[in-house]
Length: 109
Image 1 (cartoon, one colour):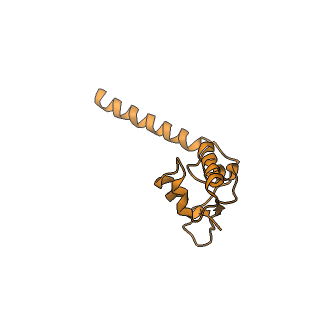
Image 2 (cartoon, rainbow, N blue to C red):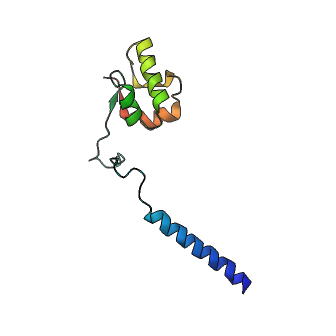
């Protein structure tokens, strides 16, 4: 009897946790959902690194918070306009992983 009791309780617990997780509302219900660029109908918004302000960089680029957005703007002010999107890798705090996540979202034109 004890052997069957523990797996039954574990199963009941997992079912309860699963139903609570699916019933919980999203934390950012008011935020717009951006679809992945998997379908040809979806357009990815590009951000111009030479004109975007800190708030735009922080809001639109994945993995870029306030400090990294500030570093991008500071780099641009110190070194002039970005010549290519790859130059973003030279900004302190922006590594290959963050650049790869945002490669399709940044432009310099």
